[in-house]
Length: 154
Image (cartoon, rainbow, N blue to C red; front, side, top):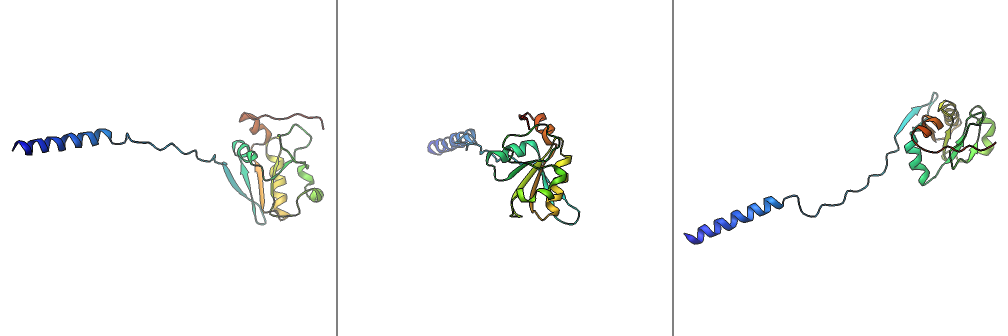
């Protein structure tokens, strides 16, 4: 009987120890989730669409830049670092020779508030480009999110 009581006590101690240690073992380090691009598809009349991206999403995209970055604002009111081209929003078609011939190339126009670049994005889609993005909120949204804007004389 004493042996049986000792066995029961030992079992009780083991169960208490297991319960007390539950969840306190090695905890895996949290994995850093990739930043969300915060995007929204915008349909274009006549077919196709472009993607609006937030300032934070653009900042993430600029870390591994794989697109042609186009300032479409007129007149010049500043720019975001890494801008590749200056093409006025209403002169996209007249500047096709300056744009990639590959219609699958990723293009991202931006402007001061997003309106002019949305017009440029729609025109690019209508011209057959299939991977068009637009900075939602433009340079104003970019600055409000805490990112720098460059001022150069043009």
